[in-house]
Image (cartoon, rainbow, N blue to C red; front, side, top):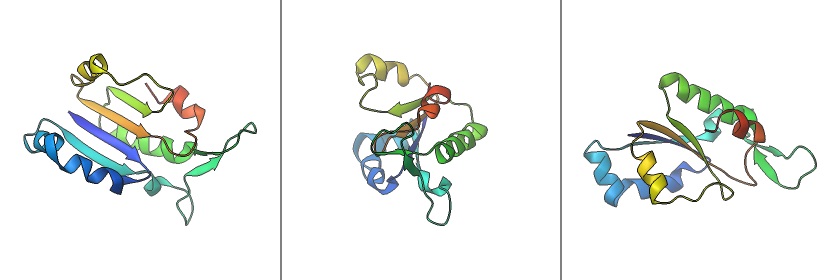
Length: 127
């Protein structure tokens, strides 16, 4: 199983995935985990990835362009069974969901930040 994780803070995820059960699964070849820095797809000199909510809502969201570009780039490299957005308003992660996901070959996990992501990404790219 290959898991691609898209995040703004890749250094925070490097440690948990390099130890214990997850590390042993990677050593045995059962899991392959790749962490991608969303800022590499950011816009401008400062690699901007955040924007204001359209429609007058308060707070910041992740921009469409960097998210779209990284997901499309990953999808051009291989076929993905699921693209999952990790969000508090999503379905709770439980054992039946874990059982279903463990049978998949390739998945993308998108880590939210700020107030969330642009809704167009949820509509068109998140499975």
